[in-house]
Length: 182
Image (cartoon, rainbow, N blue to C red; front, side, top):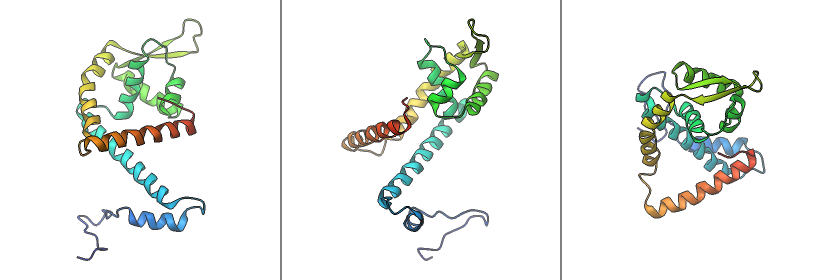
């Protein structure tokens, strides 16, 4: 088999391409002032983030929840002393209000969160964890943290330090651009 020929297990499958065809596309379609090597690294970072989420969703599947829904539960856990509105949740998670409402509906059906109307303004709704939600989060966190740690398994200690420094730098830069923080 030649280097360019791809194996198909099913006629409907798409072949694995690797980064090179994408890099060629970057070269022919990027703006003149775009650093093409940076675009390639940015693309690889996007792929990495997709894969990290895929791994997490696989690890969380036995609990019947996805990372994005757990992220909402963690936000409520960490802000338990504050009242959280659906719009504040959407803003903090970087999702639309409709997406937040959909996730809250899903979590509410499973008795993990509850919506309460404000005493001061009945039009305002707050979302809180239920006791069952707090118990669920406590049960799932060991698996969650193990999965987070497993992403670093192939890095040597000195590589981890460099990686942490780079990720922190990129995180701060992106947070400044978006004017958000976690």
